[in-house]
Image 1 (cartoon, rainbow, N blue to C red):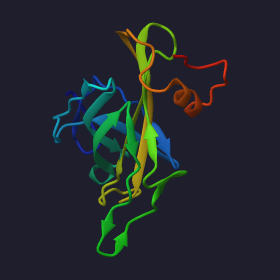
Image 2 (image 1 turned 30 degrees about the horizontal axis):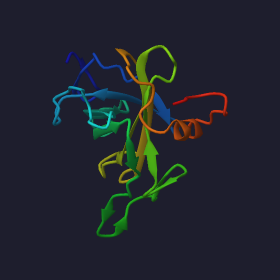
Image 3 (image 1 turned 135 degrees about the horizontal axis):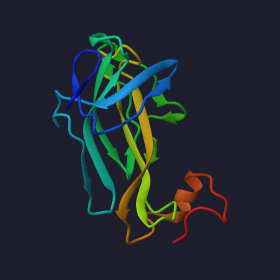
Image 4 (image 1 turned 30 degrees about the vertical axis):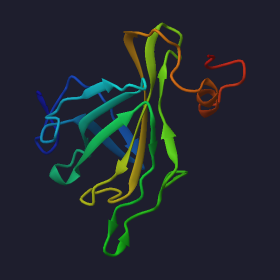
Length: 179
């Protein structure tokens, strides 16, 4: 850990998460100290062939302590269910949806060799609920997806249904993945 966020939190600069803009607000995502994984990204392969990645994710708005959002991150190439909003004694905080996805619907990642280069690649998905202390979207559910490529050789083409993968990614019948 050798870099810092706007509140002074040490970050793991060996993991590049890039920046993104949401609703006109720019974020710097990072893996930082102070959580269960002490700034480390941990990835394992499950018995079913899916990857699971966990880390202490931090979103930094660049405005100091009030703009640093800490999220426990559980990502997978498997399937996750969209959670509901945080519930207080006054009822739910925020909408019961993430974009077009409603609470209870699922999102799926994928793992295989989708670009045909002989190495593992795919899509990692994660869902959760923003903390009530967040300066943006407090208590509201979120869903993230991120494509990835590796330099790890693969010995099978696809885990899961090729038909479902092709449908999910809008491939035509002569494109995409075959089994």
